[in-house]
Image (tube, rainbow, N blue to C red):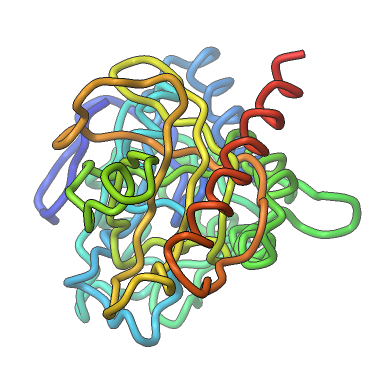
Length: 311
């Protein structure tokens, strides 16, 4: 996949089938769009291209902007695994935000991305104040010579599958439903860093600590059964997300995982922690001994839960 980011100066020579959006979570609704694009590629040979914006922490106000299910890097990795040919992560600036819808279509989708087919959902909006939509694209298709495919929303019963819906499920700790709508387990990526060194020496449970990106939308704080992807292999795990309220001092939000059956040094490695099941909310214990007893219970529960998945 060719990853175009950090620049507005690019040009795609090959004809493309294009869609646009945040692609936050790459859920089943997004997958429906991508399957439609794959069919266009099969029939016409166009390259599959996705247009989205670079919404990095430096580009947005984290106090007012909604956090994301997948970070920019996670989104890139997800789309690459799906066989996307181009991912355009366009800089989001004041100039871009004030671009009129038709100007956006002509300048970016047609002139720069060489779009011959545009695939969008029924709720697609673009351009200044979101004034452009699927009807606008239909109105301009003959003028700019592209085919338009509008895809109906994917639904869960009567509700549209959306990133907002999935964030609500994460906030409630409903990982099974969130993962069903995502089409894959919700995951947190990060590099293993040193923690407070209580896990192994003091509590007897060595853990892998990662610090999530500030824009990452995390589920409700607490303990989860998990799977951990390290060096091409999956391991079972039990993961705590939160601020470690039993430990004295102020702790940043962290993701701490006890990994079953691993006995090698993984400091500095990038791992993927997939959350499968919510066990219990985060709580403050009276002391480290009480915490240790609870961790033993969580560890045993996680092992039993993972066994049920393999049966």
